[in-house]
Image (cartoon, rainbow, N blue to C red):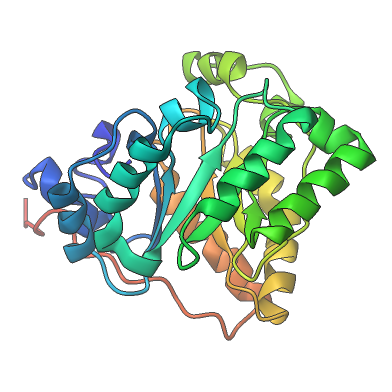
Length: 274
């Protein structure tokens, strides 16, 4: 996401090459979703540059390859997972292994998920995002998945789209997201000490902020319990995502004054008189 075109000149300097923009992004936020790893495993040298551009407290939530989760559904993926784990090794303990599963992956597939998670390195954090409705609407399926994740010390990642689907789309970006994003109930239960939230708002800043208000209370509660959550704020075009993420953080800080401030971003462009 740090190479998002709309961020150039607003959140990252236009003059920065794409290979250096993560450093600028890390001045706005202290975590990032690694979506590109879903489509191709990066070179280890590339990941090493990510590690060098970020501080020790910066978190990477890196999505497992599509071949592993969607195409082979964990069967016969040993070589691919070895290559992936070797590639992201420079991130060390800052990397969370994010298993995003398709809507067709249902309760009957949970055993395969459990076996896969237990084979992952013990020193790597695990997080799983499911999209099959049964996990949210069937109490037995919910319990089965929670028990499986707990047994592997893995977190359940909710993708909250409830506000987004509250009213019909009003723009091209919203229409595109309307056809692609999952429509599932909101889930607010944490399983580990580092819960992760993915939240999708609207084009409207007001609607986006209004929709995340339930989460500020949840996150504040987690912090008071000693947990260390990571929250990703999305909109259909993501053009304002870094600023919105900081606003969410400010809203939580109002409830938990002891929460550390986010880093102060560097000026995007040099100040001029004219």
